[in-house]
Image (cartoon, rainbow, N blue to C red; front, side):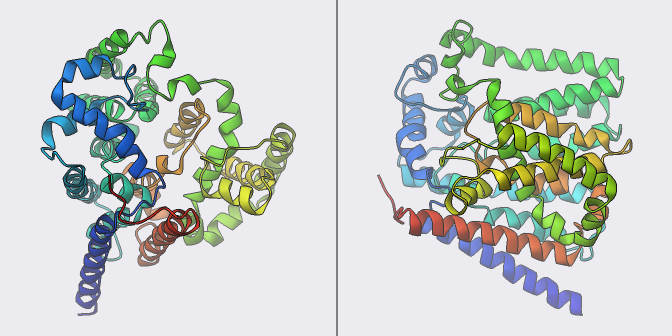
Length: 431
């Protein structure tokens, strides 16, 4: 009887979240700070031109006025399947369409067969995504950020199976297709393809590796053709607007920034498992590792400064309240590295191999945004992590679900206050 009452309250809670989601659309919420600008000055122009002359627009994608940072896969999809001719209807269609991501999250979460304290949590957890300021704004303004999640969520599920060597040949081919589509949707996820190939090598599965490379090669042909007609092979800066910022030196400079974002989205797990984590962190081994890493990083990064345009909440906190002093970032980065080193073992090391690939991948560009991690961290928690990880980290408990909802709600409130109050971005923006 008590569980039925709790489930009724949970249904009411879901309805309130859905109401807040559509309320955000109605008031034209801009909780990522730039959704309206991206739509007006970039995305809408591309989609409109694609409808008029598709191939000419693709050919002149980088020469025209669009200044887009991603491949035109999302724009092509919208030009073919979103019939709206007015930008407000285009945005409404995307706001509704992106709710399918919640269903996909639910479907693959259910496939994980996790033993939750309450079976209703399988339905409840995906709705945390609707509190993410970046998911909301990308939906409201028809941006590119949410589109890869349609392919990324199942990709993470199959990668977990691959790590555990419980994936069939045909599911591995499906994984290859899904990761390829994820990359076309958002090129920042190229680390998934590298991770996929690395796992196949470690699993010593030659047949799957050969067919995977063949499928990747075949599916890359349209992309390489487009890059060819853009002249990218003569000048890599012609790929996207971010291409001119690619620099291997950025990997070194971005380590504290990326670490702070990893730490930020580890806070819910830390709170849930505080006593366990403190025991690990305060161990002699971990403190020694932390001290060594901190001394090295302090020497390397003691005078580093980051742009106010990117970096996430912890970077902005350092800029506003610590006069851009990097000490907090160095501390967090050192603690994160030390902790990861302390908890890696032979039984789970393959899951951790994705971390250095993300550092290398994201680090190539100077501007690293928090939207690259939110709501991605939720898919990592519940779809990529194994069932054992989820149980050991107590991600299946009632307290965890409460903390995650409160956490994401707090992130949303901070974003709304920062952009709509402090930066004075107006509601009901229209063009």
